[in-house]
Image 1: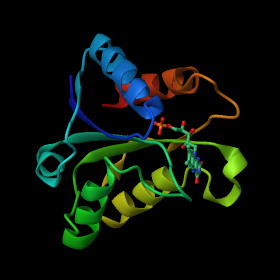
Image 2: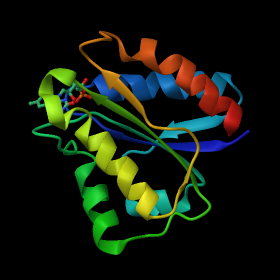
Image 3: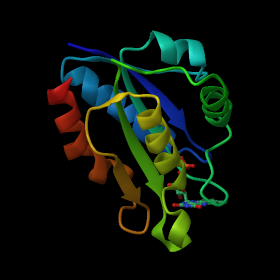
Length: 147
Ligand SMILES: Cc1cc2nc3c(=O)[nH]c(=O)nc-3n(C[C@H](O)[C@H](O)[C@H](O)COP(=O)(O)O)c2cc1C
């Protein structure tokens, strides 16, 4: 059993909905997952197992509700050594080069902070999946078995 802290970036609720389903799924798998709201640096520092689930807004940008934490991470550079971290990125490939830009930024930055990446990032394309859960279930199954 692992305590899993989920940090969500969402503008219109897709990533939020996926996060809620992920909590149910991970808890049924025997873990103790919860969405951390608001997403603060203190909560991130306290977490051992972290899942970021973020959509992309603007032009490859991080949603407003996750942006303060990301900016704080950039300014304080809190090392994440020893923490298990994984990222789910939601986006839309019709945006071209900025596809899943927010998740990619987060994923690259946690590497700089020396986090242990549990799984390669999952990118979910809204053009391909109307319901993000369809794309996420198998990946979460792997996450559940690795933590
Ligand atoms: C104003 C706006 C800008 C967006 N910009 C991007 C983008 O740059 N790259 C991308 O991959 N998706 C982009 N998207 C698509 C969203 O990330 C995608 O629809 C996602 O599922 C929304 O999830 P949310 O409701 O949790 O915010 C954009 C959507 C909107 C409405």
